[in-house]
Image (cartoon, rainbow, N blue to C red; front, side):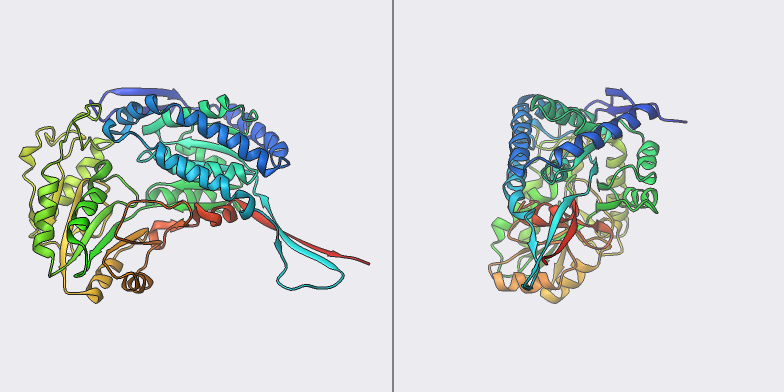
Length: 463
């Protein structure tokens, strides 16, 4: 059956929230042609001019926050009490706008050579396709959209069907800011149409955030097209609580890092290794905090834990929890206390598991839900071994009072980002990247501009 519509089913009640028809092939061709044409003029504007326009877009987007917050709740279930994503959106966007001039300036040759002018300039790649996910529909998309435009590119956005309204908000803000027609376009595309764009070499760079299987599909679709790719895929981010950690701080922050957004965070904490000195107290404190969550309708201000974005996501986590218990794990949360979890909807009670090991899928495979496994460790060596025992590597968090120890442990971890005494946060001045099955490439920081431009060398001889 051929997809003809993009459909969003609200996790609140399972009803259809939004339906949009996918574009015709002629409309896709026209969109690409108009983007190419707009980019020809845009690339010749100054960085200061781009900064003014992109800042106007950002201001227009931020002004929509009151409407956006309930839309996010309706589309993917995040409680309105948390206020949306725009604080992080603004931080990342303004940082990337602010560093554009320095990041894109010509690089002089390493040595002087009399009679020659030699340098490397950064040129825009041309047309960038952003394929954005539903879990943080604004934060994930802004990571590429803003630096791509600042670097002189045109941008096409394909948003997840679960958060189709976010794509429309981006377009609305661009239009209100007076962006050149065609320079940014929100497109309603099927998976096959997206694959056709990539396979046909119709864009120059694609940034995809999503599952490992989705990333593999993107790579297969782009094979032979010479389209460059940035891929942020799955994760199973670990945390390690050392014996010198501030335990109360670790408990509070790691529970939030594991359960915020119903655990649907790329860099959310999915497994915790605790030094034997703190293990019992950590588990007790974590269970106490988790029992205080209020699972319910995300439009209710009292709700602190909303539904997962789709019932099938909740069912996957239910299966992981059941498998772990069947293999000997202890489930500390009585799910009967969370009445909204009836077992057959997107509403899922949080869970804390102990007596877990790495034979269980909950400790090895991505959960992306409100569950976490906690293991006791004897020290750094065991913790490092277990933290690295994963096909993923996005971020890892170390809880300690010793900065030097955190850095030394971090050097042995197979991950893209090392945190100390915090987690689940992106610093826009640092590269956001992953290793192993988590992906390739980098967004944010000055390195983002390298993936969204190409080097062009100038070797000018004076005679």
